[in-house]
Length: 228
Ligand code: SAM
Image (cartoon, rainbow, N blue to C red; front, side):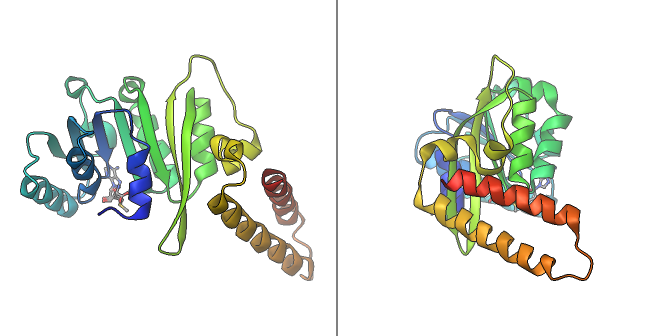
């Protein structure tokens, strides 16, 4: 059984059946997708030998070696044009690492019909990167799992140039549209309270850190707008 986080990531990979999971760790995601009958052909890429070996063992133990190819490779070097992958998943990594991996393999990224990304941090920067490279966010999820909140998104190539506002980048264009989803509201109310507390603390400092305060105030204004 997948964690709530990884289950939400898996749900965003529909409708694709040829999926590469980059930074697959133990290959839980492609194995699950094959077992539910969605994944026809997959690649599990891992850059570290230990997890790579365990991924191979898990795939073999599940009897899926024909369907899931496990490769020791850095980022999207795990897939070749001959693999005809439709979708790449990058989950459980920092946002900067995710955008770096995508930026280093522009030709491979351009060959895909979908991206499913779950950055652990810097989610807004990932959304801005997608827009700047003409990838439209087509679905998003926000879930609590084991005391942490995770956001994940599906993106597809856009024909027109696009840009997300600061509010959309921060809180997610699809999540904002979905309205008062309980997890979304709970998460952002928590973030809002955290920032308001920080502002109160900073205002008591001897010399006011004006730039930091202004940045926090901007974020507070955005979050309040998103929660309206
Ligand atoms: N994707 C899985 C998930 O969401 O549960 C595993 C997440 S795990 C925290 C991140 C994995 O990405 C690690 O196994 C790490 O070795 C791998 N990784 C980090 N940088 C990578 C890169 N450049 N190419 C391939 N894998 C990478």
